[in-house]
Image (cartoon, rainbow over all chains, first blue to last red; front, side, top):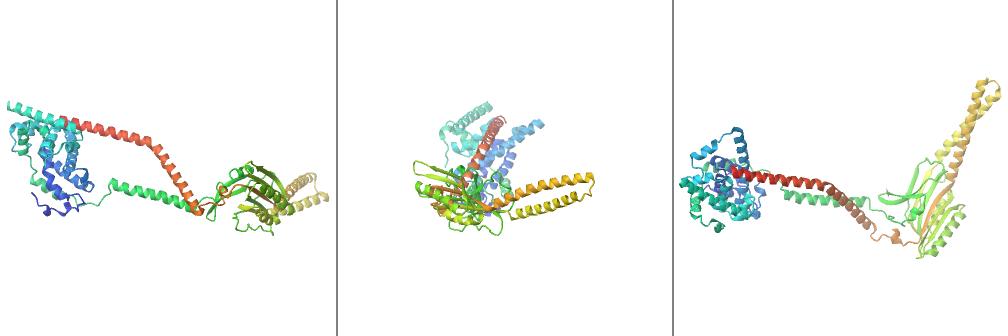
Length: 180
Length: 369
């Protein structure tokens, strides 16, 4: 873990009352944001770019962040989601234009989500839609509670629970299918 | 602390454990990239909330300040609402709010009467509060004077007495009452409207004595210099007389040819006609300068209603004027809101529709990618 005190002065902005310094936020939440983006995009390189973009956006609007309105992780995930949606749009346009699916081919060749995952789980995750993967990431990996995850997704708590339930069920089905 | 609702994950423990055991970790290069690429701290920008916190008080302060300045500059009229309806009953009179020495008053201006000569000279008007002397009417020049007085009397019997006394005053000064309207009601209130004419040189005396008939509420005197007009008319008469004399001399000489004689006769006739007109106009000018017109309003209305005794004084008028201005500002804002509200409504609806469309597109995108 990086020593926060060794961070450049630019990211050690004078904090406001109730808001942690931005460098602490980076140190604490970078992994979570990255995981979320990896699961959402299914593309590590894209997730890296999007994570960098997310923290740049967050830095720009850090003074507007109000910790009373939500946890930093939720706030960062919303920014990350917005950046990822823009990326998906751009990808869709690009794919329509080029009619190539090189990204999908790359997905099949290497482990995308994590090195330690079983091939069945990794394969099953690939088969989920981004919407299903992101709810799994938020609720399971990042361990956000229902309301926070729903806020990130922009849906109701009930819809979030339903989506999670369906995603996990489908994940299990896909794993079974891969084993068979 | 994990806030996960475990009911939702029941049955998937193995899956969850495996996922959690192998989370993707952010590479160190990404961490360095973010920390090194973090932009330099920027100048603090105002958030929407801060903007609202600044703009709203500033707008309110400006509105109140403008109202107070308006109140200070134009604190309203002492006579505003004075004797409601009286001036309308006068017939040939109207009221116009104007400012005089930083004080706004309602002046009463007499309409020019038909048949009176056109008054082209400079007009001098003055509102004279009761504690000040009336405007001095110059006696060494020909001037036309108009005066308007509002006098309050205690009751109906005093009104009758004051009306009679007013006619006596102008008669004693060589003038006369051109018209008298007397009105009284059952409740004991009443009013009288007198149009008086007095010689100009005695107008000041008349105004002073008429003002003593009761409580003087307002007094207005206006003068118009007619001397220049008189001099011009006199000069015109002189030149016309000389021209007529020349024409007559030429006709008597007998040296003119027939056409020349006819031409001179025409010129003579024109000059004589012009002379008659200018003489008539000069007579009118002299007559206008000989008498002063005084409009006297006598009423029994109480001072408060008339406006002579404003309870709040200048401060009260200031507040009243400021409140009026604020109300005007409110009307303008309300009008703007009424006009803009459909546009805002349509804009809000369009924004909502776009947002919903964008959300659906996002959902479709993430569900199918």
